Structure formats: structure tokens, C-alpha cells
Length: 324
Image: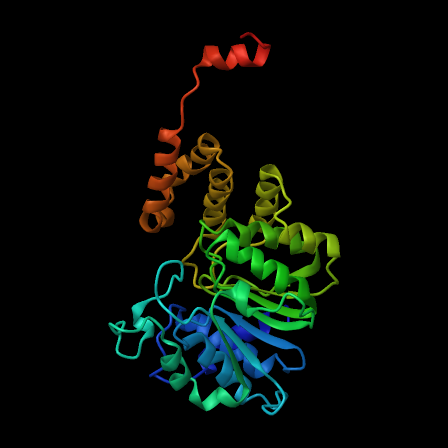
């Protein structure tokens, strides 16, 4: 069992405040964040949360750090990155405001966030705004911990991979909070590329996959991930490699093999191969979990397939033999 894996047995020992800030993370994910902060981290290298939202996950992690004798509150820092506002492209909820809805004259919940995290402000460093603007491209300092709950688009994941994943070292802990999201296949095939150099902690904690870097990662691997330099077929193979290692989540509620199969369809979809995408997705409609929770995904992929110009068998044959 991995060091991180030993934390699974301690879920029941965690007592988080009942009035924890609103978060879209599950109770298990919050407990795991606390346990990692309390028992695993030191603060000697960067502790980073990408996508702090309303502050629930930040609070759980910070609470664990504050109770960790190995963490020095005077020198250690928890770096929290987020837009800290609602609006187009932010994927934020108005529930992140203390009142539960956005004020008419302001779309920023940064002050609300600061208020909720007040006990931990002495060691909390807040980076508010677009990640491309708030992260430092010249910072190569090692990252000890990386909670990724921000990579909802390929554009943002490129920033994450260029400016944070490249700073992973043996001992770095990474939590992918959106690993149950088929529309975010970059999380899955990048993890496949990292498999030779990491240890997965255990079953995903609901939608979060946790792993620890155990071997130095070659620069060319990190570069290919950050440059998205894999073909569609390579990405599908990398996701297949993850499917061999990840089955259901620790509550037995999420069938990750099926989720990752649907993520393969999105690899093809984003590449414009809509026929191929639908051929992957169509058989998955019989999966109970996916049919119940991802109906909109199937509708999107089918719509793209049906809108694609159809090529008749004769035209395809002529093209193959070079007849004009």
C-alpha cells in the first residue's frame, strides 16, 4: 500500500466543521484533503491548489496543515488560485457568495473567500484572476502538492501542465478532482503518460484521483504533455493504460472504466473525428451509470455525428482507389 493509500483508513477519524464553506467536493474528498495536509505534507516545497472556488476544499487542506507539526506556519505557504468571480468562462457558482447569490454590483467573491479562510490567512497566499496571468512562467521551484480543480478547458490545462506539472518531483502529490469528467480527457491521457513514474494512491475518492510521483519524470514526457504532442491513437492508448489501473471509486459508485471509455470518445470529438467519437460512445448508452448521469454527453456526441457530412460507400471507394 502506498503512503497516500494508508490515509483511506482514517476517513472516519476526520471531524470537519459543520459550517464548512460551500464546495462542490464531496465529504470524502474534503476529508482526504485534510488528511493529506495533516499527515503527509511539510511545506518545504510549494503547496498549490488550482481552483479554490468558495473555499471548502481550501479550508479542509489548510485545517490539516495547521494541525500538522511538520508544517511551519511562519514559512510554509498554501497557494490558492482561482478567478474568484462568477461569469462566463469561470465555471463558478453563485453559491460561492456568502449570501448564496451574486450581488447586483459585483461578480467577485474574493472578499467572501478571505472571510471564510480568516483563520489561515497568515500562511495562505491568494492568486486571483486568470491562471495564465496569476502564475509565474519563470517559477521552477518544486511543487510538493497540487490539487487540480481548474482544468475545465484545454486552454487552462495547457497552463497547468506548462507551469505546474513540469515542477513535479519524486514525492509530489497530485489530486485530480475532475477525474470523473469524460469531457476533460486531457486529465486522463496525461495521467497515462505519467504512469511509469507515479503510484496511484488507491481507488479514486469519488471523482478525485490521487497519485504520488515516485521516479524522476523525463523532461521530454513533461514537454509532450504540456505541448499536447500526442496523436489521437496515442491518447486512446494512454487512457486504456489508465483503465487497466483504475476501476471503481472507493464507494463503488462510479465505474471509472466506463467513464474513461467515454473520455476516449471526447478525444476523437475534439479532434473533429465525430463518426469515430460516436462509434465509441454509442455502445456505452447501455451503461447504467453513464445513461443516468451523462445523457447530455451522449446527446452532444450524437448531434456532432449527425451533423457531419455523410460520405457514401461508393465515394469512399473512389477516394481509396484514386478515382476522380
